[in-house]
Length: 147
Image (cartoon, rainbow, N blue to C red; front, side, top):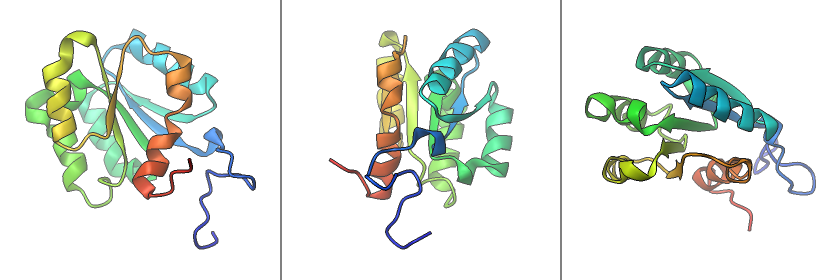
């Protein structure tokens, strides 16, 4: 890769969402399938996991390859926010933006997640338009945001 070049950007600085890898973490299978379908419709590469054990296993095996981690507040903040704290402490993972999937009634725990290092949050139910712009978080974290 050429220095200063980002593989997610095409020749004319358009984002190629098919090159962006998202790790989707949701304990609710039905919700996970809905979000997965929307992400795929937006052309992202998505790996989905449904439990804390799967999250840790995936982070340890493929985590550094992810461009964005999209996780439900219940999973991310369970057990004293173990998963989020793990991501923020691990050198190979902390560069990956973590986006919290939340509901309107989970404000306080979502704010705690943001204080612990999550990059942003999205409120369910999600819309395709919201997800189509997830790629921006990856570029912001890399310092390559294009305005």
